[in-house]
Length: 98
Image (cartoon, rainbow, N blue to C red):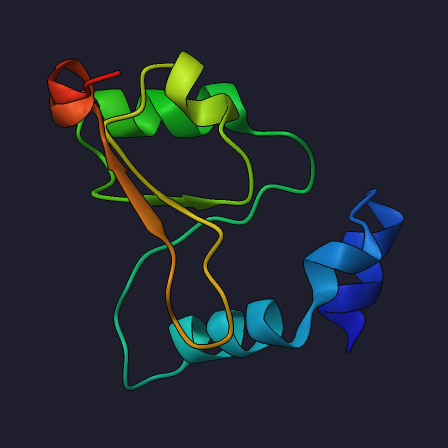
């Protein structure tokens, strides 16, 4: 599609263009769903964490743990094709035991 080509020209990697990502974006853009969203063409950890800390978003989905260091409130890690992932909630961080 022309959007995918534009994303690649902007520096997006092939990993970003997985089938799961494409299906998610198509679903969010559909007329049946009214969910506002943004797609960052580059690293957006700081911006995402700001949106989380200020309460503009309820959940961030990512493949790595960088967003923890930026103070994000809730993060879903490693979402797979079966819709499973690891949920991190900043409010629970102090409850961790070693």
